[in-house]
Length: 251
Image (cartoon, rainbow, N blue to C red; front, side, top):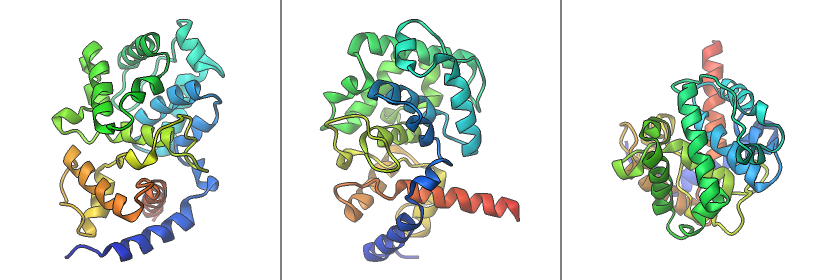
């Protein structure tokens, strides 16, 4: 099968966008948890955990991240600075020990940079370097967290970090975009096996486990489709795939 022409891809994606890129579908996605908080610091902290928990069934991920953050109240960034800790629980491969390890790393980053947005600010024109530096800052304190956050320096697609950054930078009815001064044009596509399956069926990449090279290549395709906002179609694609999977399970 040859590569699907860009005009055909754009038409397909615009149809999905028109159908699914609406607040009505946001409640089915972990990004909804981010909207439940106000203020950039709270949203960036909540968003990081929601994105890192965003795998498997989305409704379970939403339940888990809400349970994780419940002890912190309406101002989790303030609670973090005051020494409060999230709930002790398990989610997929996350253990209570892993959660506490990342929580401590984030607290240290807040002490050093003030906010996570401040950490990324110096990399706003070199997004890949920023992602790599963020991962190295975490892994330098707690190497055990690599299975959760990945490392693009070793080829990991780091899908959940790309998802978090989409939420932080894009701003519309789906993505809250609390970070000011960052361009959505520089974002990278959150790529997992489902995205690869969709892309491979259209001749956009090989049907094999994704790597960072896959992310770069597919993001370039989406930049050709929407140069100012390459992640324009991501939520619609993910929502369509999730609803299709639910429908097939029910049969």
